[in-house]
Structure formats: C-alpha cells, structure tokens
Length: 137
Image (cartoon, one colour):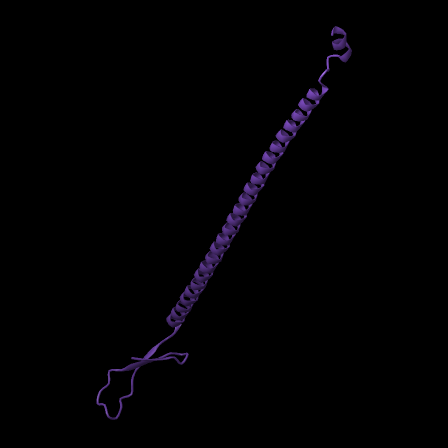
C-alpha cells in the first residue's frame, strides 16, 4: 500500500482540485460582474445628476439673462421718458423766458377799446405792441 500511495503522488484526487478551481473561477466572475454592474449604475446615476445640474444651471442662466434684459429695457424706457419730459420742460422754460425778455424790451401802449355803438361805456382795453401783438382784456 505504501508503494501505491507514493506512486500516485500527492494529487490522487485531481478531479477535486479541478472542481475547486472551477468553483473559484465562477465566484470570481460573479464578483466581477457584480462590481461591473454596480460601477455602471453609479456612473449612470452620476451622469443623470450631472445632466440635471447642467439643465438647471442653463435654465437659471437663461432666466437671469431674461430678467436682466427686461430690467435694462425698463430702465432705458424710463430714462427715455424722463429725457423727453426734461426736453419738454427745458423747451417750455426757454419759450417762457424768451417771451418774458421780449416783452420787457417792448414799449406797450394802452388804448381804450373803441366803444360799440350799442354800448354806452366799455371797460375793455387792448395792448398794441410794436410787433403787432394784440391782447384784449
């Protein structure tokens, strides 16, 4: 018997060793598949999160740009209205000042208004200036 054991060597049951190697290889493959699936899921979730964040950022930027454009348009419109009002005020002031200055330099003569034949007395007067202006009161 001792000779038989020596002749067969330490690997008497080679089938057992092959089965163990196959089982270990299958277990390693299962672990690798699970790891790959987990990595794919994590990458997919990360991509979805990045896409959502990018979309949110783009929407916020577009909204900010729209708000800024609306504010600029409103400010420009208000400024234009204020400028137009200021121009109108300046023109009115200039006209009033010019009229007042012209009226100061003129020599006005007051004439009583000619009495109508049907009126006995009239308190109305008119102002004749050198420029032909007529003011009746």
